[in-house]
Image 1 (cartoon, rainbow, N blue to C red):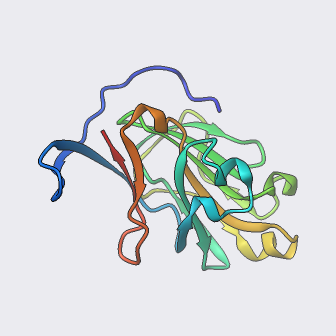
Image 2: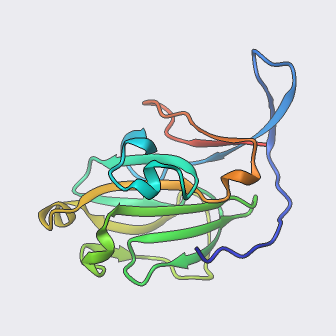
Image 3: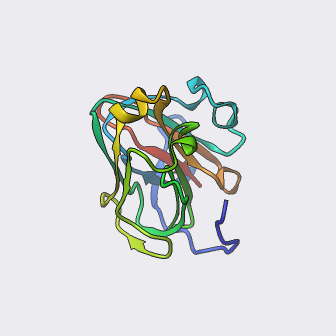
Length: 173
């Protein structure tokens, strides 16, 4: 997907589990958009639902005009020409793919506005794009946003908090 193959030093906070005395490190991948968090397995695109691209979450946007936020600090390594998908390599070595909608590549950028470019450094929480969800729905496309850690296999696990107060993904190392 255009991510460079290099190992960066991974930095994370140490945490311990209440059920396991063994220590692990955890890195949070933050909020991407406002909406309802659903399991990735529930999306209609089988490449995402099967976790073939990696583990993650899906977000059903709640706003007609939805901002897409950088969930991590790092480098924008991929901006698809149709501006419906972005790849970020975090400063911690996490490869995050943000894919807006199912089959929205066919919209050829209609309803999408990008505020970033490939090679740009970005901070977690910065607005990367704006999406017209109504336009996507009017064109009969599913506006679900998929957030995937494409290098899932480099970590112990990728889990979703997936609740009303925390829509982060957690990378366990």
